[in-house]
Length: 320
Length: 252
Image (cartoon, rainbow over all chains, first blue to last red):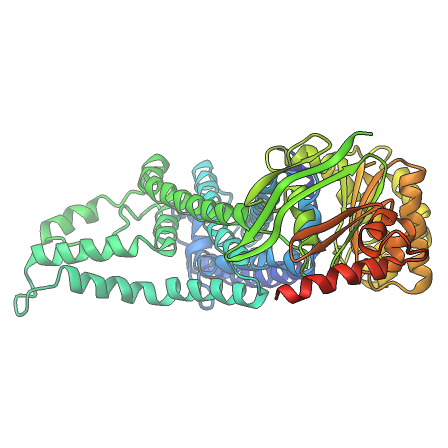
């Protein structure tokens, strides 16, 4: 594709040498390493003298540190990485009048938007890989435990999920930068969307479920109505990429988790048989549970980028 | 002499407003064509349509035989464009800016450094090549813009208000440069301005644009004859232009 390589290269250079990236990386690294160290030492103390549980290494990522576990931290702040990398992608060039200059060169117009998106994704992948590797290294040091192949594979799936998820937010940020002329507006718009998904989606899903499939008054113990309402709430909640991501990463990083549901109606005998089968789920099975989530995330990201692409291709670029 | 740029009934409408109205233009190879007109006359829009940066509402255009709407890349390979407010990446040096544009044009990295230095020397910026463009004055930016235009060895140069905001010395140098493009390099120059004395100095032919209409086009002597009468000995482009301009006003 004519021009894509040149744009990609330049955007990558810009990102890695920008103050923005250095600040972001420093903050995230600091928090991750701190949390990893605390979790590591905590785990080491707890497990002294006990038999080593399987999948110990993954506990490094899922046990709660000071406030959040590492996986929760990345789930919460990951979108910010995508937003920071993308919120001024197009409107900054428009303001500096470099966009018309770039587009008067013999390149395809979509090389610009594709190059920016790909460069952002590359930076995200590099950042996440660096964090995971650093934390693994720290964990090796503090815990003294080497991860098995299945744990490594699970971490790899986790990385792919995270890159796709943060890539979605990168796409949203670039879309905002295409739609809005002002850099501040695009930043605020993306932030508003993130706040909505982070804080209000759960409430919203519950509300919609109550409206569409309400529980009959009085007989609140009717299991069928409960299940129907639960189903509606889940369906609405799965519109949020945040829900998709947290469910998927929860399942892949915690092999004891056999289902993505948090509400499981079980009777006493089922509970008994469940307590007998406390073996961890093999990787393939966990991956199968997570596959629809991954596909949905990829699909949402592609739709977002497609809208962005379509709008950008039609816009008129003037330098005056 | 073959025609390098030609348009036929080229029109651009923005909603209800007509920016360019049925433009018929021919620019011959190697000549300097001055595009005159007040602000908002449609000069920049014409440039954008000829480059394929803006889609015409009606009519056709041909640049070096290519259609800018159908084959924009081929047009952009042979045309160098200097917009009215040329933008650069402020944090990068002049050489880096040129290098990026060269890469976008598909030029190989090998001989690039030498070529960039030669161009910067030509426009008189070699001493400041390592400085960030953010520190450049307007005159320096215009010169860097010209270097960018020459980077791809164009056949045609579109210059939108090239002398706007330059001091008298800078203006002189720019006009000499534009003449050099045509006389020495054989590049067809299509430039717009409302500095009438400057246009008179260097243009082979001029076109006067008023509210989207091309009201006159041709060599300056011909326009003088048409508007001011044969017995007019001395004329200035200003007189011709104002004559056209004032005639247009009553139609409001």
